[in-house]
Image 1: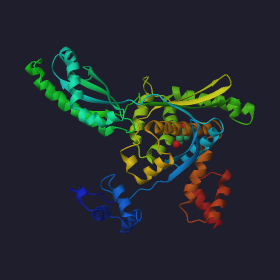
Image 2 (image 1 turned 90 degrees about the vertical axis):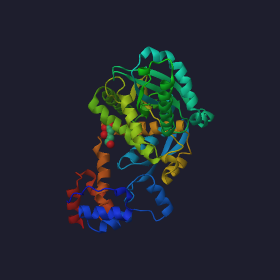
Image 3 (image 1 turned 120 degrees about the vertical axis):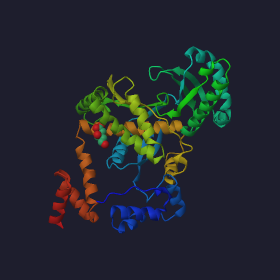
Image 4 (image 1 turned 180 degrees about the vertical axis):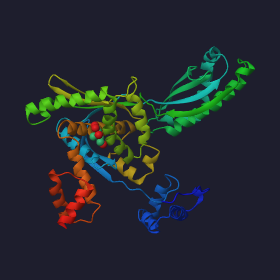
Length: 437
Ligand code: MEV
């Protein structure tokens, strides 16, 4: 394949020119242009909403928009809208939802909603001077950010704490303003970053003008101002529970299953290799719901993985126990999400997803995301300690392979029957189709 050459001003080209440049640079077939075009929406207004989400768009990249019904959360039935490229995730969630709906459903409790951000700066004065004058600085910081916090304050949010931290172990003259925020129904990234950047301007001019400092102390160097995606105090706990005997129809089997399930969850809490895959299973559900609702799943993952390492070792996020004949499976996880602003309020399908969920508050969405995580974790671990994961995966794998051939519904059904107890691979399916055509 030909390599593309360096190009200046690519973003200024029209979509047509961008596609043509790519076709020429990579020596692609001209039909690539039509193929890309056929994934565009015929409704120009809707297409322009999608276009505005990113730069250098050539087309749209489709993923299935699915739904998993029967989620009983704190006594209320919900259908979860899900977007994922992994074929077994929606089925796993739907199965878990149905199973637990008959056993009291999912229980959820929001533990906190505090978000954090930091102003990182250097200052070459004596630390005691800054600490002594910090109350005065704090007042000025809050005063000069008032126009930004006014609206948030009306909704019950704003800045809840500002701490000055001197961290010479990181860099010799390094300090932080470590700031806590309540952002109500917004994820709050823009609000937090705007406040922090204003803090930077205020701090610089305050130090320059403050008579209490010597000349050499007046120089503050702002390094950066940014929210933190680590939000351990924006946390939710979700759990399911039932008598062990209700886990399976056969009492003896139920006990064996419960023991193995608890052991599998325990292994993930202690073994890093297993913990990573275990948590990946949790994010299968969380990410699918986060994407459907237009939330930033990278931010969610980054924060939750850090939380999983809070004790110095990366660990599984869920917990399972058996106590007095009762089985309990839970997940406590930081989730900083919003339901107003951002892609949630812009993407046409994210808006539909929010409708499907009954226009939840940020707190409710936090609980639904955690429930999706616990549900996908439940299905994955259940499969692992019983049938093994390949049974379900292979079914989906076969469906994917079959859809790459032009087959009638009957032919697909016959192939599914044939591969019920046979090894599935592309070449085996191809061989079967050539023999049964
Ligand atoms: C696959 O997407 C997810 C699993 O590997 C999760 C797990 O192992 O717990 C099945």
